[in-house]
Length: 272
Image: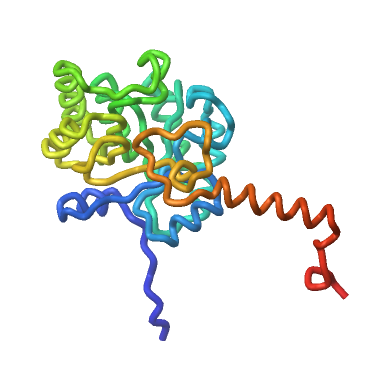
């Protein structure tokens, strides 16, 4: 008889239970199969296929140009590399803002065609009814407040949000409305720590912080940032756990030198 432990994937129930039990939630982005396998085997709780792939994978200046086909393509690859982590896929710009019907179709595609377990969308009370409809349709929704990169042109750049009293109160009311509408979790990006702590205390659903202080129920980073791969911009909230950019550069330089000198391939790497 096999004694192998059955591997089960985390669900929205597990994520909400982690908040109730005071267990912090770990979240990282991934955009390809290989990275997803590594994260999944390292016991990450949630893998977010973020539209940040527009910046770190596709080379855009913002997330705005990312399409549904981009998200479907990369989410499929990540889903194939995971067995334990919950996979959440971003709804890209203009895939949910035009109409509720289009939003439901696009969100459904990420679950049906790409094997995501949930979707993420940006915005506050203006999207509460859409969150409610998605939840009723069986589509789990992770909400996102604060710095919302899809609205970067309207926000006037990458700025901390909710610093003024009226803006902080609006964000609190947005958070409560999104929870009431059925969101199972809430990302808070570039938000003052005190405001993020207040929102976290007010909600029964978990908050996931990115530049939102220490009191959130979990944390998320772009994997390319925390591994030191993406050098074009390093936000203040990013901690680099490695410098793979330098490691890769050094490895490639050695490879080039050995190819040029004839040192590679040698007998060890040749067939007889």
